[in-house]
Length: 414
Ligand SMILES: *Cc1c(COP(=O)(O)O)cnc(C)c1O
Image 1 (cartoon, rainbow, N blue to C red):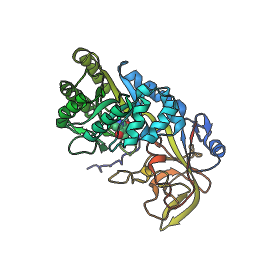
Image 2 (cartoon, rainbow, N blue to C red; image 1 turned 45 degrees about the vertical axis):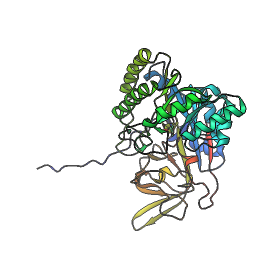
Image 3 (cartoon, rainbow, N blue to C red; image 1 turned 180 degrees about the horizontal axis):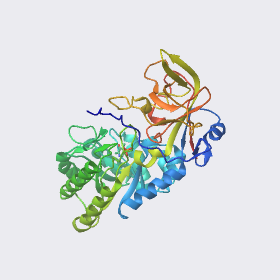
Image 4 (cartoon, helix red, strand yellow; image 1 turned 60 degrees about the horizontal axis):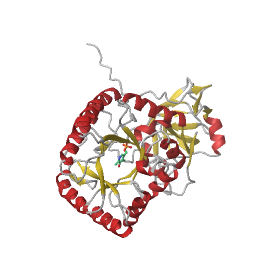
C-alpha cells in the first residue's frame, strides 16, 4: 500500500510584478526605494502599467462592441480613477461622493452611471444636473426624479436596475436573486416601467448585477445569458426602445490557496453570441459589462514594515506596522466565512533561499489583526517589508482606518 500524500492547495503564482536583485518592482521601482519615496509604511501602491495591461487583455478577449465600465467603488483613488477613465468606456458610481471623483476624472458624464440603494434627493438632483445615467432601484426614486424633472425642466436619464429571478452561482457575494435591497424585483418591473412612461424621464435600458468575485466562467456565462433573456422579456414593457443592457460583471481574481485565474475565453465566446443576438433582437441596444475588482485588484499591493519579531510557544510572529485597520479583507473580516491567507511575500527578500513558517500580525490589540496565518515566507526581521498581493480592490477605502488610532495609510499610483 502506498501512503497517500495529500498536497495542501497553494496560491496561484503572483507574477504580475517583476523582481530584480531580490526586490519586488512596482512600476519599475524597487520596493525599498519606493518605500523611501513614499516616506512611510504602511502604504498601498498601484501599478499604472498593470492597470493598462489588464484592460488591454480584457478587450482582446471580449467582442469589440462590448462597452467596458469601471465600477469605482473597488478603488476610488482619484488618480487611479483618472487613469481608468482614459482606458474604459464608462465609470459606475455608487454615491454622490464617487460621482464627484468620476466627474473630476474627466470621464464623459454621458458615460457615467449611478447605482445603489437609498439614493438621496440631493444625490438624484446632483446626478440629474450632471447629466449622468441613474439606475433606478425603487418606486420612490422614480417619483422623486419625476418631481425633479418638473421642478428643474431637465430630464433625468434613467435605467432600471433589475433584481433578477436567479442568482449568480458560486459567487463570493450575491447581489441579485431572492429578496434583495438592490434593484427592483423582475416581476415588479413592468409596473415600474408604466410609472416611468407617465413621467418625463428619459428611459435608456436595463442594469442587472447578479454578484461579485466569481472564478467560474460557466457560472458567469449562465448569469449573462439569463440576464440577457430577462432584459429581452422586460423590453416588451419598456416605454421607449432599449439603448443598452448592462449585464453586470462579477469577474473574480484568485486570492486564496487553490483558486485559479478566471478563464476569459469562454466568456468572450458567449458574449460574441449575445452580441449577435442583440443585433437581431434589439438592434438599437449596446451591451455593457461593469467590473471593479477584476480591473484593479491584481495591480495593487499593500506594504507594511516588520517592527517586531517574537516567538511564542514555538510559533514565530512578525509584527508589522500595518494591519486590518488598513486592509480589512486581508485579515479575513470583509465578508469571508472562513479566514484564509492572501498571497504574501517579503518584498525585499524575493530571492531568499532561507524560508520559515511565520504568522504576520498587525499592531492592533485584537486577535483579528492577522495578515498571514502560519505561512511559509522568506525569513524576515525588523525592517523588512511585508507585501500583500491582490490588494488593488476593496482595500484602503473598505477598511476601518480609525480603529485603534494608528497613523493613516497612504496610497500611491506608480
Ligand atoms: C460592487 C459593484 C460592482 C463591482 O463589483 P466587482 O466584484 O468589484 O467587479 C459592479 N456593479 C455594481 C452595481 C456593484 O454594486
